[in-house]
Picture 1 (cartoon, rainbow, N blue to C red):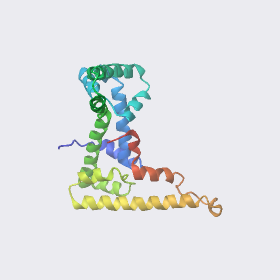
Picture 2: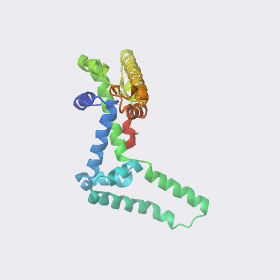
Picture 3: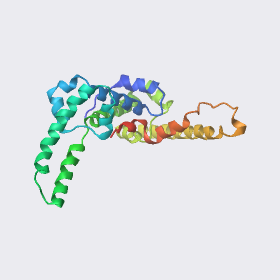
Length: 229
């Protein structure tokens, strides 16, 4: 598969100095996708067809509910509901035996709830961003140095980045980067735990005040709050 480079957002995410630059990018991808489906796209016939057929996962239906555009969500919900009724009506009126009925009902409902346009959109963007990271590392010495001095990635996004690499040197560099940041974070959260002892209460935090939150982000990936696939 051929990917397009998106160097500007990757550079900007790297400069933000978060525990995972890809989580930072996924947060923006999530925001953009929600805005897209609550915007003028709802008047675009091909988009509405896709919305009616596929819909969203529970997390992203919730994101759309919280998006502050009730009219757009009403338009989406109306035609998606119409398609759902169309697929369910013959079954609901069939009066089949219980086991056969349950099996067919589960199949239709599972199909209706198995896709998510926002998950797909985020995944496509994250693949491009991961590809861009690998290409920039190979071609741009400034990016290579900046990434080496960054906090790197969360454990969730690390395999995606490694997958895009083309050389053993890249794979080794990502491993070194990850291990260094895991050990850095271990020291930060250790010191945070020590700060609660009476003998350390007047000592500086050394930037560890939020280490408990950043450990979770490093382990699971902050962007997974938005159900990124």
